[in-house]
Image 1 (cartoon, rainbow, N blue to C red):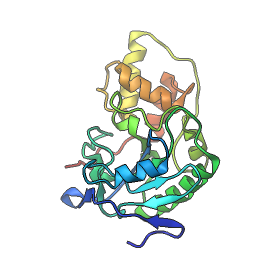
Image 2 (image 1 turned 60 degrees about the horizontal axis):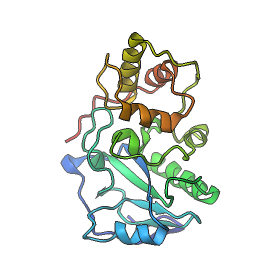
Image 3 (image 1 turned 180 degrees about the horizontal axis):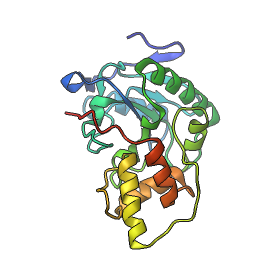
Image 4 (image 1 turned 120 degrees about the vertical axis):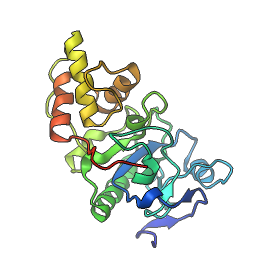
Length: 232
């Protein structure tokens, strides 16, 4: 595939075919946690590092494409979202030049929004399947972190957001119901069990104050994860 208009083609050797003929039906957003886009670009294209992503967006809005969208980039690693355990084979990975401890630049976010809109249209990916690295690998990964503006994406139909911010109930029954709701939305937590600290941390980092049982149940009801499509 030719690089998109305004996108710099900078191929990485760290990629391969998607397994079992999979097509991308998810997008995973990352932060680089490195000192600048060039350092991240060098690492994502270093064969010794054995990591990559389809895209990298610099803080200044520069966008590089390193892997063809139809190919399998090595960005997600171990983790799960719904029934999908080989996330690399089912996703497109976008790295954002950010250390994780400061806001994401306005120009960077505008480029991300344009890129996401095209990806969702090209591959017919639903907004609820735009997730963070921490969502599919809670405890192991924290990106894109609490400074990332998920609500902004949701307003543009590029992600999702709960419609309620009711207070959280901490009773044992409520905690089990919370685990069931998070499982229904996509987090790897057993149903009818209280979610572990790592899953709760990922949920809170993404949705902030909107992390009540009611919010989780709203997400699970409106955006149930697709468990029919099993991964390799």
